[in-house]
Image (cartoon, rainbow, N blue to C red):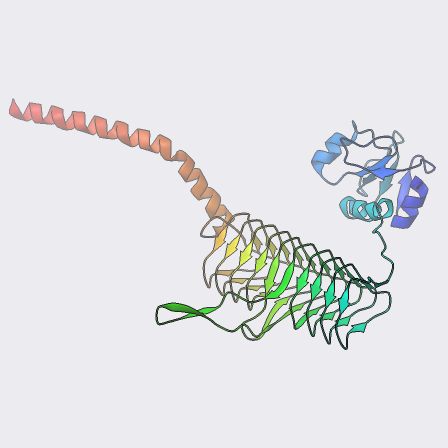
Length: 348
């Protein structure tokens, strides 16, 4: 692809050699003369001069200069992601049902659907147009899968689950398993029946080996555009809003509410019925106590989770503890000497 063609496809303007042939994408420090890279931060801007990249995607305010070929875009990182899709297009699967797949009764298959080897689709399920179900997947009864969805190999979707269009489930994802619900009777735990459902919105992406449990009663919900990383657990009756991002190894206990556009770091633990309000940010490794409310736009860190400024102040105080301990020891020694001297003077 030539620089001129890439710029036109991005709806952008270029400076420099528009006929330069671009063969791949690469990070700044490894890019060569036939690669395109991007400048998305101040650190990257400092590295750009020494980069051998044949073309750079740069912000609109990038200084003019004929020393290299650039394409000006409002958001270089976003434009680079789009450019990557031109160099690495998604492999297209031919529509059809593999001979080893098992498709139940009264299943509705939209046009251009692909069902891979050894996949199973249960009775009364509806698969939307151009959706893909990979090898070894299990899709239960009365499931609704919207158009253009991708289930990578070995995904499990239990009965009575609705999934919107354009959603991607990576390998090992389990949707609709029983929630962790038990009641104590006569010194033994007894299972509380999990008879609710799961509803997942459109354009959601769920990472490998993540689990979304069905509700005990009612619905476990994940809103449109939300992205879950690998090994995320969403407990029963949780309500995750729209365009939420959650990093790996985070766990949501039952009944948690996360409002739109919240950002949740990795290895975060969230207790029962906690509420994370819109656009709140939870730092990696923090712990949110049961029924706690993290307010809209607030950034929290630590366990228990507290406002970031307060958390940093406490870390600074902890760092000073060794010195404080030495000072206290010295003061105790001085006081002891003063007491001893006063006792001696009293005897005289």
